[in-house]
Amino acid sequence: MTTASTGEPVRAFITALEDELVKVESFVRTKLDELSGRASLLTRNLARAKELVSRDGGAYPERFRPALMELRVEAGKVLTTTVRLDGYIRLNAVALDKAAKKFDKVANQSTRAWVSPRHRVRAPRRLAVPLATLPVD
Image (tube, rainbow, N blue to C red; front, side, top):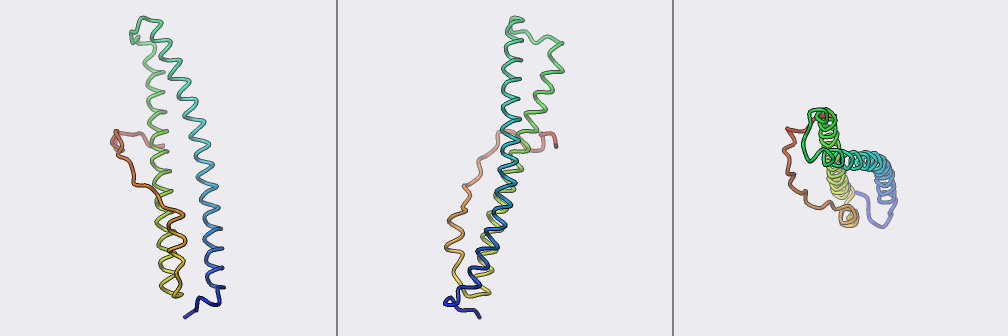
């Protein structure tokens, strides 16, 4: 078994974890940027739709139906992508914790106490919309 005094296995493990975390963070940032753009466009389009409907006296004319359905579908896609990204983040946090736990067991180290608190994920919020009703990307 490796002793804590050598430190080399711990450094190698932490370096490998950091490399993987950089990949995960890069992916998450890219997806968050995409979601931000989609959400901004959706917000603008919803505001425009609201303005058009209010001009017609609050009626919901048939001519708006296709555009409003497209907005609804896009809102569902944004929500679905957000939920999936949240799941991806949580899965990676659990994987990080398990990797640290396994390393500690095999190498007789205590990296988990250092790694896990830095990557804690808050408890999930309940969704108002059942996932089964959302369209798939």
